[in-house]
Amino acid sequence: MKIQDKKIAIVGGGPGGLTLARLLQLKGANVKVYERDINKDVRVQGGALDLHTESGLAALAKAGLMEEFKAHYRPAAGLMRVVDDQLTIHFDEHQTGKKEKFGDNNHRPEIDRGPLRQILLNSLEADTVVWDSHILSIERIQDTWKLVFQNGNTATADLIIGADGANSKIRPFVTGIKPYWTGITMLEGSLKDGAKTAPVIHALLKGGKLFGYGKEKTLIVSSKGDGSFGFAASFKSNEHWAKESGIDFKDHQQVLSWFKKEFSAWSPAWRELFESPDTIFIPRPQYCMPLDQHWEANADITLLGDAAHWMPPFAGEGVNMAMLDALHLSEALTSPVFSDAKQAIASYEKQLFARFAKIGQATLFNTEWMHRPNALNDMLAMFSKNKLKQGLFIIRYVIQTSIIPFARKVMGLVPARKVFR
Ligand SMILES: Cc1cc2nc3c(=O)[nH]c(=O)nc-3n(C[C@H](O)[C@H](O)[C@H](O)COP(=O)(O)OP(=O)(O)OC[C@H]3O[C@@H](n4cnc5c(N)ncnc54)[C@H](O)[C@@H]3O)c2cc1C
Image 1: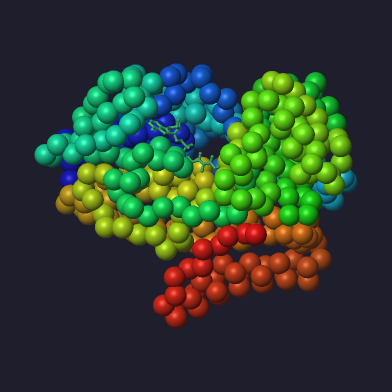
Image 2: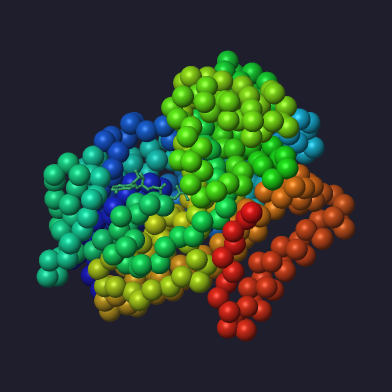
């Protein structure tokens, strides 16, 4: 199959879409990325991301961008402190340190989203990304696609790749399968000048990550290179909590009042995260695509990243999977093994379904224990030097993520839809 003959439209310029554009351009493909943001600077990018050797970093290496990554990653950003709701430190990587290095399987270096996006943007040919391209719909006209944007513009393409995230507009053209509600809501916050705005948390954070665990609630804070913090409070709730709560998330006083009530058992020091009028809050109800999802491959449209397999972020796999999808899809589309695009896409999607079934299990396992009454004990068991504690945690992991799913498969049962209440 000659990919050079096709006009490819990637919808969405997140980490998945941009990585795919780079990888395809290296193979001489004709690619445009249609991105909703009006320019590259318009949006506050979220917290730091850890890229994994076997996925995110593997894609960057193939894209020839490892040197740029090494120049921009933040070695100290991955150092984690685990605290309880009273901010007592129970585990501290600033004390124990981290020994991994590039090439190690468990190495997970951290980079801020902004610099990662910039590295990928810089790697693309001029005018690859068409900003201010909020897609409204697509229409098949004979052998081509017509893309219709909110600003009135249109474009055409032979092949569309939906990389437009969790609420993908492209996904319904590939599958009718919908995500299901997990029972958890996350309230994301982006706070400027952490040292000044939240001095107690800043001192504890020490340029790294802070994982706070209370009864059925978590609060994770991550420092960013520009001195700001990204943080997320997560808790069990109704599906439509964000609307039903009546909170105006642009009014920090309303958010603070809610936090004081909902996290009343937590040390008042946490409240400094919610006290600045400049902090931006976004409620994010957590959904997950069914782990057994699959669909018939098409010849001219497919999905990657969150658009394909949206899942909660509690295993830190979302970005890594999006970038690995990009690597696999670019390889399939440019492989001489496949005689046409449908075969290439079918092979890519088969791999994607299998990988998501596995990674999704691990993600749901984390989502569950992180919202248990004794989540702190589970977190500490994972890192414990006590082999019995660690062993019991690993046994639970194996039972829930391998043995139960295998038994259900043998018995012909669909995977359980995990809703955490
Ligand atoms: C609070 C939080 C913390 C997270 N932490 C981690 C973590 O630590 N590690 C990790 O691996 N993952 C994490 N994730 C998940 C991770 O952010 C996603 O899995 C990842 O960004 C998916 O990449 P993507 O390229 O598929 O989609 P996205 O990053 O969502 O990118 C989609 C792009 O498409 C654009 N777009 C959307 N709709 C349209 C449209 N209609 N038309 C045109 N463009 C459109 C968007 O503007 C965006 O640029 C976290 C998520 C959240 C919410």
